[in-house]
Image (cartoon, rainbow, N blue to C red; front, side):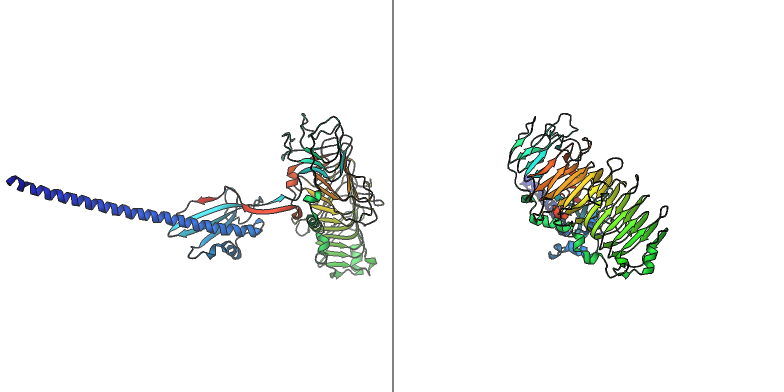
Length: 589
């Protein structure tokens, strides 16, 4: 019995140990639960903060997609902050979001709140703090324009196409190297009627020694390709299936922007030129004149005609604001003329300089003929239609009745042979022509060799006949040109475009109710057209039925870079959207 009593103390100690152990374990469990709850709360707060930041980012991106002022101007105003917060602000009890828009420069410059590098991309960033957890997320937003209304065709005609001599059509890659990828072809020659080629027509780049076919061939009618088998297919529709009447009207309206805004671009109510001021302006000695207000040359004075000239060895500069000439305006000799807008009720003639001169006219409206003639010898007359007070401004729009550049004024066709090359930088241009007469409305001419004349113009449109000959280059790969012959449906005569320039047209030619004959030829060193030629119907009375003809050593080269660089609103679709894969969560607390 004494042994049993001795064990009673040990039982008590064991019980105390067990109870203490359980207490410690319980305390540890409580601590673990508390820590776990705290960790869970932190994770929940972090996730909630991230969700709010993502919601804010989505709201901001919607605003940036709808308001693309960030392409050229800072996107930081209070109104723009409200735009970015418009969708997010509807969330109840949501924390405040801090928004930022900045360029994707390297290194990042948070103060560049717009597309400073001009690549069409900016970062959109949103930051939120929820229960002490701060989250910053951002995503790259891109603005772009893409050609969407035209087919991928190097050459297209609704009727027949003929290639004679050593003419050719081919494609190159975006970097200008020969396209040797073979079928399936990215682009094609598409002929709604019959296709007739020559033995030299390889449909391959002249720089490709293997002569790999670079464009497909689709023909609805007969095919004559002596010495070649291009495996043509059919299924060619109408150009108007792509470029319908609505898009045609939009391109016409874009080209006619000067005509449609004539009442606001030109001030017919400016200060009238007096006889004493006219004598001063028409003096032939050297002078510099700067107008203090818009000027009007009234029809009651000198029949509304104004001549600005300088004697041989003399030079003058005239800085006008808006200049409204009711009659003819003649600029000759070494005279520089700058205007913010120029209206001519008669004809405009510019010629005779012997030194390099750049006139900057702003928008131009001329009710009759505009005639530019380059200087003698190798001197160049550079005419830029930009506001002379801001030489970085975009070229202004142009409306003229007849446009002649270095042409024979008696027939408005052919090089006049008496002047050197001419450089033109024009805005959107509409040449109205003399409807129903069959007269040439647009004429570009240049010397046969030496220094080329250059024409830079986003779009030049007309309904009347066009001629190009001599050494003249149009547009560039980076700034291509669109030549558009609109279908006028008058059916009075056969509209034609005789493109015999030995220079290169960089851009897109679109023609309706017209024939185009490309015949310049330049020994294969450069194509006559770098871009594409698209020819649609209906035919007019007198058409031969072959609406697209290449002859001599002429060529058309499809260059995707040229086509993609065309940014006319009427030919493109704009898109502003996040760039896939650029969403990021930046370091937070």
